[in-house]
Length: 480
Image 1 (cartoon, rainbow, N blue to C red):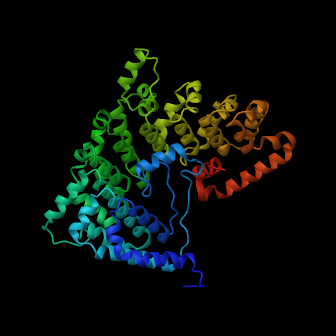
Image 2 (cartoon, one colour; image 1 turned 180 degrees about the vertical axis):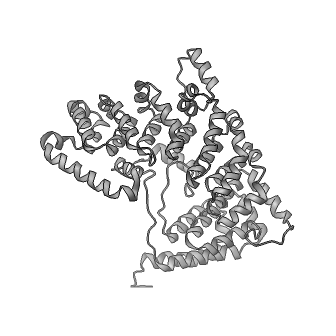
Image 3 (cartoon, rainbow, N blue to C red; image 1 turned 90 degrees about the vertical axis):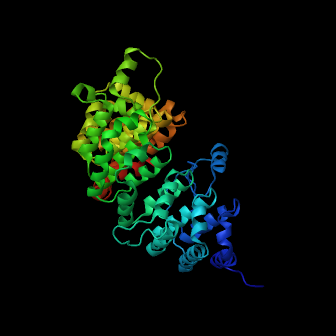
């Protein structure tokens, strides 16, 4: 209207009202679908942010690749909380979801599930519905999977639905939708998926080039210890085959499930030892090496015997498995700790400056289950090397984590070492940030104030330790 300045809320709602009848057609349009996804993010109060991995639901792979090589990465992957939005936005989101679902026939919805452009929109609808409206999410899942959440009479089977789920499992596009359903499924639906489609078939599906990703999500989102125990019993004997035939992601997903549910730790550790052939005490000293390189003990020894000068690249999935194992209860993560202290200090120091290995070292420091004695031993092993680590892109992050878990006495020792090399660190791109984070200038000029400040931080840390835990505090410090 002339002379009336509409608020952003009114303009966004007007846009939705004008286009909502066309949403069913727009979600499969290669250009319009991106606008629809952004609109859904806004209505749900989610920040439209890409994580830089190319796996988000807003950017296409081509766009993500261009963004990575041409734009600033300063804010990539930064944590962005959900925003508060007007109640009218939530209402509009429900209206749009309802309109889209009611305006589409079952056959069209099923065709959209395997449509390259429409599939990410359906994933996003599931995601925002799961956080906003449980009934709406179940309705959407029912529309996609032929009333799968409804109770059925014993002995009856929906053969059309069974065939459709099998198609989605093996479809390059449709499998992503199933992965999302695994993430948002209620405990009852999750159990139904297990009993109807996955029980007794987890190993076979884990070897499938596409279905294995759905199985990974299924494991990661396991709900109960009893359920997980049944799933673990099925796949643990096949860990060695997964390793041999290139399915490390499945092993990682099982380890992650144990960490999430808090069960089956002993069984999984046993399965890993069998797969990597680390049965004896001597063999287990190399546990970190075999997992990080994703190779068996025999293969590692053979490579060393040949004195292969080419250092193998650490396997990212192996690093993630070690990081997850370090979050197991202390009695179960002992195998990783013992392997760490069986290594030469120089080797562990080298790992701090490796893009993959450094994450494993940091996991020791941020682990919520490892005791302080272990962490102090690691901190002392790096004395005399902190200034070298601070000059490295990855080593600098490790120094930050070391600093975050150090007591005042250890901080003074680290600060003294950094101060002795202040000039070279101040001229180094990464080193100057370490000097700033550790307040070395204040340590040099006003040491008493620096000590009081650090003691104050210690007191706050002790106060919140029970609530936040070591890991959160160390991570938060690392991001400062």
